[in-house]
Length: 121
Image 1 (cartoon, rainbow, N blue to C red):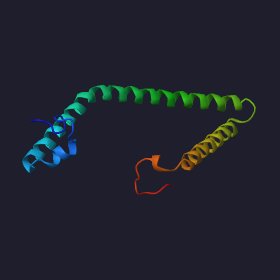
Image 2 (image 1 turned 60 degrees about the horizontal axis):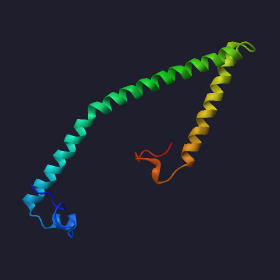
Image 3 (image 1 turned 45 degrees about the horizontal axis):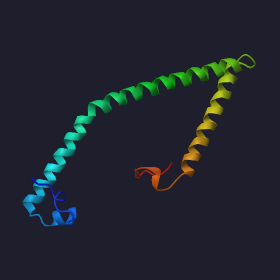
Image 4 (image 1 turned 180 degrees about the horizontal axis):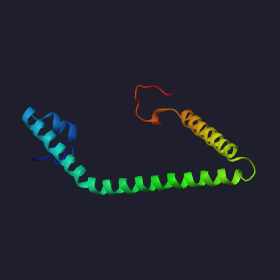
């Protein structure tokens, strides 16, 4: 099938599509949908491998962060009891999380992402 908009330099693709009959328009939409699905499926193995590597990197970073938190607790535990050291580090992490959340909420606007309907809590 000849794709509208690929012939004639002065015609716009919209005017080409507007001149199609219902069967031709249906065939065009079906063809373009199949082409888009084919391109997406062709890229999926590459994206799947990349996603797995990114997830592995995130998991390793999480474990690394946990090890650093444990090291900080152990260093502070040299001066105070271990439970106090863990409490101090826990409070520091919670305060840091609250600051980052406040920064994220202050950057509101159209680029905040998809609305879930659940509200910002």
